[in-house]
Image (cartoon, rainbow, N blue to C red):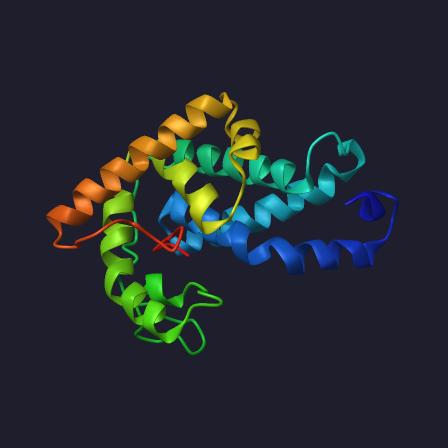
Length: 199
């Protein structure tokens, strides 16, 4: 980001290539609507470009980037007179190679073993349904931590609350997800080998 701020246009391409997918996944799960998520993603990168001269390396670039994305998600939700959410179980239309696949399955799942992939394919739609039922502040923390790998300290900076509050929201999110998944017939712990089924 410092190189881009100094005028290196190629540095921006590197930033987009590195962060586009995790930021898009965060925005998609925050908004629940693919078209709106794509719009918010574009707004996020435009804001990065417009605010480049103001960027200071006081915090990690990812903290700054997710703060921008989160604020734009909140603004987008406020602008909506109603929240029309696309289910992550709904079929994707128009996406190359994704025709007819559930939206939740079209999101990248890198590095999963075949057994883990099969388990995730069965559980992921149920997890997404349970996740959609969480209060927004709990869902936000869970998605940033489990889907984007953002540390608790950075999540606190992004959301503007203390790290203890973030950890508390994560605990409540996990409890809520476990309870809802049990109601949906999923046995066992969310975590397997130290990672949740989101990974």
